[in-house]
Image 1 (cartoon, rainbow, N blue to C red):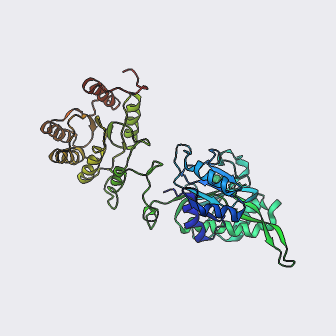
Image 2: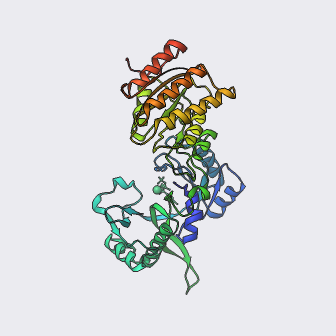
Length: 434
Ligand code: GDP
Ligand code: MN
């Protein structure tokens, strides 16, 4: 799970003493923000989104007055950042940046250990940093890295040439970053920039204010391990793959695989704008991707995306079947997958989906105007498709059922033509001629 910056800072940086700016979180301009900006003589207002490159998108704004801050808060809350709507803004103490480092910790499959990546050329996108200016240091897979080890890394990347006076602070800070990475069970923790900042401090001898350097994490990109000892959703709540509030159907679907590792039927997402009129029950990562791409290609508008697999039991198929069929505004249903290797077709389609359809019919919730196309292969396919055909028959469902004799990319085309013929469906403009 990916964390928003304010979550990462308030729950992880604070706990592990990673030096960071003071901040408040807001969703609209308010007195707390105004007071914060007044007290600090300015602020940085940042969009809380899960995509990166907010700076480039204009979603990180430096402000000097409470009025400017109020405008920045409203502007940012009203914008889409690379297509994503901010859930909040963070109003942070403004730092006076002297240098920007890049710092990331993740796991390497090569060394089979955590690795710390450091560069003096932070601030810009990591992919734009000259590879000669970036170094990766494997460390032992354990809870702590000694500050002296970090110190050696900082020397190697040239930190001491200009900022030797804060070598100790920087080493401690990165040692704490490592503890945070380990302790919070992160898959990845990236700080860009980890900044050398100018601060004013009281001189111990004279009591006068003097300028000094310090180190501060000015960003936080954290991916928690989904298999962490405490599941991240229990701490941070459910998060849909899409950058908006999950719909009730998406939430219901997520619960299908919770605490039940038999197969996977709960990955269900709807398009960002919630449009689409074709219910998609698709199987396997590859099969699902090919099917959905073909749908868009022939002018169908998918209402959702699934990639069911790993031989889920009938109960899971029953639940996802009901969710898929409950989205308002559907015109057609595409049940489509390749030839399964271990997913039983009699169990998934012949039992789970059939029971879902029968129950919806009993409850008076089955839309008989929907047009169905089914294409599937795999173990017990003959039995499974026969049970499904009988179910279609007894419930008066219009549709066609194919096994893997039909090429997978033909199924969306057949559905489109049936919809055009029987329901006056108007394929999208991008539709290719058949
Ligand atoms: P990102 O673009 O999503 O990585 O967002 P960041 O939080 O990293 O902010 C983008 C850029 O804004 C940083 O790379 C900094 O150069 C700049 N920035 C962030 N905080 C401050 C600050 O307190 N003072 C100044 N002067 N610049 C900042
Ligand atoms: Mn950044």
